[in-house]
Length: 506
Image 1 (cartoon, rainbow, N blue to C red):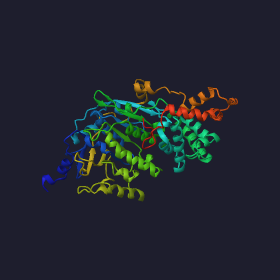
Image 2: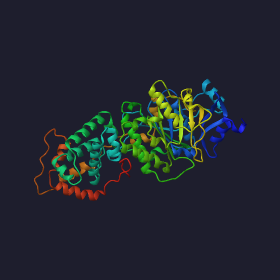
Image 3: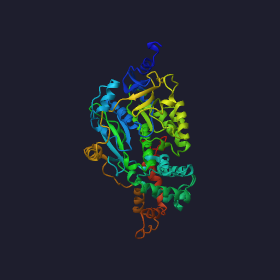
Image 4: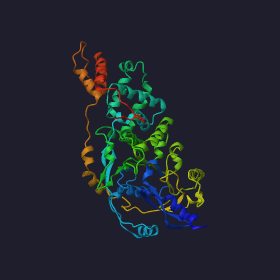
């Protein structure tokens, strides 16, 4: 075999990059690292998306840290979910030790500790970071149905509820606003309002309300509201480095549907907000979608189609998306086929299901004459991965058993006190720290109607202890209500325009 035909030279040529690229590591050939066979990920192809997969304990988190560091150093902002609470070390420089020094030497890496700009966010008010919120109106019926676990019929009904509120310019800011609208639409007056466009059955409304109560009990009541997150706050630079946004989600491990759907809302908001960019020399933002299997679990066909379409279209906005999960088979084929970069850590093959997943994983890689992939994927050490990416020409690079570089930031948490101090000094805490509980549009309309003189007898005052939805129902008995709401809807503007996921288009 000539030098030009050797595995090292072929891999090196396949990963050569004319533009800027992330340095992932070097290829392992015949059991030894060949530093000359460098494995790179071109920045220009990051909007073609990617996958980071592997069993627990194989090094996925350190890979996310490694890629995030280099993106930040290149000036690219990154959004990263910190489900286990151990990525805050990105904010502090790492310290050399024997393992790090040995790996740097074998890879030809001029390793030096480095810290990166990090901002911390949390869902709602119960986490470590600055609180992040979304309004019910902004979230929309499709994503909210996923969080509530509704079936297709119930999702359709929720869509009708949103449509009715949107037509009348009634902003649903939090869960109590949605609850009051559902209560109204199941009343006699509400049924009349929906005449001609459908109806809300008492049984379906009951299911939705019970699911809403469960969500509130899990912290959803703290998440939905204002001030709502401005996605432009995710696209910052500091001293030329891209700011890393860490979504501290360790307090939400028992609420997977909420945080996985929230990540999809963020992605949908970015799609709706950002202008068309085409192919750039480097992405404007890279979004890591951790625990991705939670998003796809029990998802309807329509929901999966929307994810596929969003992933396909958001590349033109200059956004790269990496799905992170244990098995490539966690990702539907139509989405998996759009992921140009693959970083696959070790897989287990202890059970028949494991072996079937291994066989399917092998089929997702280009053919290689250098490795027996079924053997390689079960033999990888910690911090090693099977890699293939898209070259700058758009072609898959040779499959490379890669020993990955060590992160330069601290590998582990910086501690709760350091995170709290960083959050307290952040402008995001000042912007989002205090909940705004203003009146919703629906409540404002009811208050104006109640105050307006009418030829009819004034509605009875609510009985002592009667809750607000009951008062709204009483107010709606006045014939002037419908007339006022129709005119008010015209004054407030046209029906809200909604995007692929039913999220509000601003």
